[in-house]
Image (tube, rainbow, N blue to C red; front, side):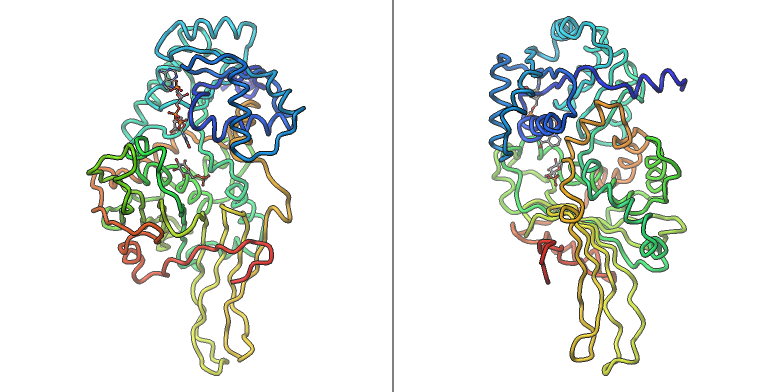
Length: 474
Ligand SMILES: NC(=O)C1=CN([C@@H]2O[C@H](COP(=O)(O)OP(=O)(O)OC[C@H]3O[C@@H](n4cnc5c(N)ncnc54)[C@H](OP(=O)(O)O)[C@@H]3O)[C@@H](O)[C@H]2O)C=CC1
Ligand SMILES: O=C1O[C@H](COP(=O)(O)O)[C@@H](O)[C@H](O)[C@H]1O
């Protein structure tokens, strides 16, 4: 790529156009992100919201305010007034070419717009084609929400369709986990600390566990979720991205591709998931949720055992579990080291439990070192060292705030690439082709019994780290 072309893709945006501004994600996340960007003087262009509803600019501003209030964000009136002055509503159906022609008139003189598509994925190609036909894709960047495809073949087909109008550098695939500070921190913790990196391999690590437990169900989005399920919703994207950051080699540079290249190596070293090493569960009561089919076989819980077959990780199980309506809300990475040998100096010589490093992603991000120390009775006792990122480092930007800012600035580092997306679909594809049987589980539990069977002979699933980082014990 020539210098001029590269520069074009990293030029600051002069307009942000949000398709789907009347939708659920906009109300939950987008207005909040825009407000926080405005608050930190990081929003420097007009914002156009596109939707089918018959809204005026005033109505858009009113909805933005309601969304902030509902999200519990304290609002500074001066900041909100500045944001309100940037907001413009643009009504129209996405299937109608006139919508894009009128948008082109509004965007006249703008050379580097960012189009954010938070619309149903079935409309991604329609919107991009509409933008192209209205002459709006030249110099633009297009941010697409997840999911990118619903399997390997559809992800390839969607990319081929979008690449008719955009080159890959113009396409930013959002995965909000890649904007989470503790997820970004995995790379720093691993490679900036000599206490970790020499041990972070198959000689010392017995297993890696990734847990994304949610204590709520799919109420309010049953129709969407029932077509997707846990594997597509959070494993193919969020959790495999996190796994890659846990397993990758150090990036060799700082450019947008440096980390992506290392993650790609991890994915390429991963054999496809085996249905015999996966468990699917559905919480009791799921089929009563509005929008869910009465005979639905969609999984709301999934657990799988994966491998990274390279020199660093061969033989180390990577265990993932993710589910709705579980005991708690907690997302964490747990690296479990090998057990030490029998300690002959103990009164009752025994092999101590393994040490662990836990990186908690949500809530209250932090790191816990689980260690063994001398108890007062001369035996060994489990103790821990806890670190709160917020306490020591301050409150970071929120994921959508960070990612929208990067999109506006033309920094693609935290957006997934097509080759990575295809690899992650390749890894999970056997589970889509031959789904393991569905096991019911009790709401408020840690999933079906099969999840425990999956780790037979391996370190058992550990109870997620729940205590607050400050002053917590347990
Ligand atoms: N909601 C969430 O928590 C998350 C959502 N996402 C992704 O974000 C995207 C949007 O999801 P979500 O906000 O939940 O979906 P919604 O159904 O709530 O919103 C969809 C938006 O698209 C608009 N739209 C749909 N069809 C048309 C059309 N023909 N012409 C014009 N506008 C149209 C809707 O307008 P109208 O109001 O007129 O229907 C609405 O603004 C999806 O890709 C989803 O996977 C990703 C992560 C989380
Ligand atoms: O993308 C999604 O992610 C959320 C979990 O993200 P978090 O940042 O709230 O932990 C998940 O609840 C949702 O089902 C999924 O679509």
